[in-house]
Image (tube, rainbow, N blue to C red):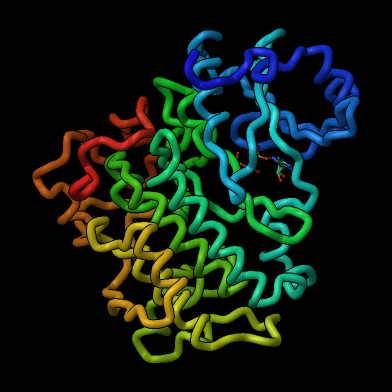
Length: 363
Ligand SMILES: Nc1ncnc2c1ncn2[C@@H]1O[C@H](COP(=O)(O)OP(=O)(O)OP(=O)(O)O)[C@@H](O)[C@H]1O
């Protein structure tokens, strides 16, 4: 094995995890996500862990599963939740992660009572941290990884409110199933999803860029990407942000619970959000450019055009102009199963590989 991982540090014994989590007691359960329940655990040496039980949806063999886990153990960055190992004894497979005490970003962001504890400086640091994590996954990690599920609930926060992206690489553990497009996980209403991915299963790093763009707008506005109760004009965050931007009123998007803001920084973030959500994936900046935009004062941002206002959720239609540019003649992915309105299933021919295929420009 060339990973340098001792198998003893890769595998946790079932008994160890049972003792750490009070035999997976309800009191220890942190929540239940698309992959299964997550439990808090305490190791004999005092280390806190989070144990994710993978539901029966993972039909992968133990050997293959261990190989993927070995690979994921090498994906390490200060803005990623660190995987510690796995457990393959007993009926369920489990993943063991470092424990983060501060819950996820959505818990703070979308609650008017809690969102003031995230001041603008903190929010900006969270955006920068997520950019660093994605830049690492896309460009620097031992294996290129497209996250596929960037959203506020997958951004965990540490004690100092530094962001740590979770759930990266999990698609690798479910070969033959698209964990994001099946009804079990998202039921076809995923406001973070790039239109070409939602409609045609066309996956690239720009899929993550799109979701990141929506996340940035959520962080600036302190609201979810879709809120019906806000009425037609404002319900869709991306549409609303675009309307405001066009009329020079971008700053009206800003979360009203924020007291001290930096208007230039916020205007830049809104622009980056809109650029990241361009309908044509080729027009979205990559994470490297976004990182430059955020870290350099002299960088002049391009003017965003109209973002993808359709095709991200249930109202999918193939007639909108948002999708006419995506084939570009150079893709190897030919998944074109047309989605009828309301359908939540799309073929994703790239699902067995989260590393890049030829669809990225010039890479
Ligand atoms: N490493 C961790 N430390 C602390 N809490 C965690 C950790 N990982 C997950 N959690 C918590 O466990 C719960 C379930 O997490 P999980 O990531 O499985 O689902 P989710 O993000 O709610 O949904 P989805 O599976 O669709 O991403 C969440 O409330 C999350 O905050």
